[in-house]
Image (cartoon, rainbow over all chains, first blue to last red; front, side, top):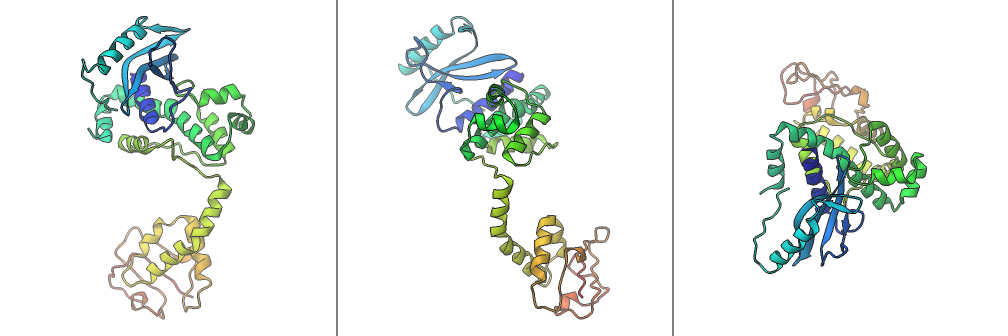
Length: 99
Length: 211
């Protein structure tokens, strides 16, 4: 629950921030095909929310934790790429995240 | 959905309420510290020197969720910024509203000297307004109970320059609390009728003494 509350608070603040940059946001992930990641910590874990910008909105595609360059779940990046493509092609619907 | 409404709905869960309070410290404080540094055009190194902490610790304090700063640490940071630090209990709705309204882009807290300069500029107007309102018939002097000590002092300074029959010091303003509807003016020769001696109830809630 603490991780949920921390994520809410982080997203609430970062949403109001004009320039997204490190350490809060990494614009280009290696082999990410245009994906970026929001970064924060909670409960001694590094949390990541992978997503991308499109038409003035930022789309979150998957949340995960990160330790020594390894995502958990391990297939987070692959899933994120797949979902990004689906959103870009209009194959799936998205909903506004309710903070 | 309205964000405040949505946030309050989440708070119906007691576990989330506890986590929400912690999140204000773990995540909210780093955003505040960053905003303060940015507003003053200072660096992490500057803050490290001012607080006597190492730069990596400052970096940690500015990273959401990385550290859990205690009150002593926050006091050191407040001291470095020469600003106040409020640690107080409040209703959840109030905390939620504060969190929703907080904007890292515009959050600023002036240091003491800047604050005093700003206040000095504004003070005469504010004091004049309060005093003028006090002279209006029917205005509750009880309103002055809301004045801070500083405002009272400014009021005193302002009043002492007035060439009127009545002068005031902040010590002469008394706000009766047990019988708020009873107003007694003890000085018989005030220029305004509502200040004359009377033992009947009047629509004013204070006592003014002249000298």
